[in-house]
Image (cartoon, rainbow, N blue to C red; front, side):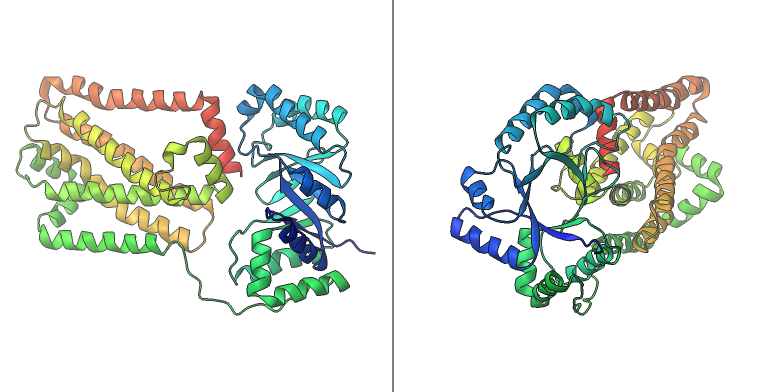
Length: 456
């Protein structure tokens, strides 16, 4: 007989025993074979489950551990694992215990680091041990072959039926022996809102054939609509600026087509307006927020986001979501711009007005409109992360270069102080940049946080 995928429930069990029994009966009726529960599970509930045919998996709460955390906490982890293994040792229907979730198990050194813990546990316990990264669950002794798939949606929507059918149907068609897990809340809501789901599960239990009538496709609601809207608003704002500040258009043309004349106008204070430069810097901050958001969503999954903000909670400015990266980009850019302007202006003996530094520094940011528009277009049309990362890197390089270009422009009329000014600006800027990169890459803990967030 061909293999078929089994069904499992990640059970957030009710406190009321009679309600728990009712849910277990529904699970049995619909062909659920496996239950996963979070540790610790009360002895009363374990006694209740002992009388059922379910195979039980127990998940310990150790999420988002980096390799350094595992190394430094080996003894504590082993003690907790041993206590849990001893607690469930006598329950024969407990088949496996989950030790890690969404942790740095894909690191090349993980096997050697975690081996002493597994060896000690194997002596003490008769259970299998597993971990999971995102939707795939694997035993430690065969990490390359997941034994379970987790359909992780927590709030049911009718369109979920389509994705469930696609994923579960694929496992059925491949005669997979994987266990297909669902959250109990999602399962119950799906049964209530879409009765055809219940009927299909009942049919699958009887015939081992998976068929389900799919709901009509709803209008797709892109979560990126706000970003596209903001981009349109920024273009409109630029058009308004050109209308209200007539000098801005020739300023743009001179900056890119006659840069030397542009610089001379600023240094000789023939161009005095400040509003256009301030507006460009404000819009650059918003563009930076968009770039941070797009790059984060392109390289991180939801699990990666959770891991990143778990380790760096101060970055969760707007909560545990990708919008926090937008806010982080805006705030970081505003701070860096303020520091850059002071850095350019204070050592410059040939600048009498702060507006000169603002206008010289902000001119490069006209390029944001082209780069970020291209970036967002690639993102919303579903291009892969490579093209997005290229445009993101280009945005950062132009932003980084804006300081050096401005410093070089200012130095043109510094006379005998040119060399000193270039050292205090471009020279120190390069040294600080190199120093920050060295600090980052020599900080193993911080590097591992980024590696974990991207790997999940």
